[in-house]
Image (cartoon, rainbow, N blue to C red):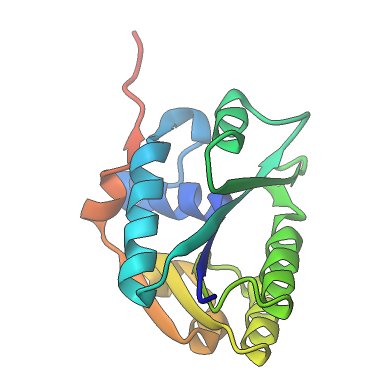
Length: 181
């Protein structure tokens, strides 16, 4: 059966999304992500890019000592798998790319999908993209504008298609938290 899986690198989404909407990288505590709107947009984009039904969405993030309340709520959503790596001392994700590549290649090898939609920018994903393509999977890369500044060129070159999320699209689900006084 032909199906699509969506792979979301939350670190990329927050970092590149905050630069787009605020002009600078903000801490997550300064941002509000409307998960419902974001997931709805990603599923609609996957359907538009592939014309195929969704297998599920995989959401990759880092955690220091277990999932945050937002991550825990996300883990209970239907058709979504939360995969957590760790956070290093600098507050950046560690091991998340390896989890994404493992799932991407595993689904490709087991013919669980024919198309993969990736929202990421890290060059560490490129080898996984190549392996998935060797199993016949088409890879559609989503980036956050300006993607030329936040996605590895080699990753972009490997993808079968590339689509950039606009400021209007991103600001529909990611907002700067209002300051409390």
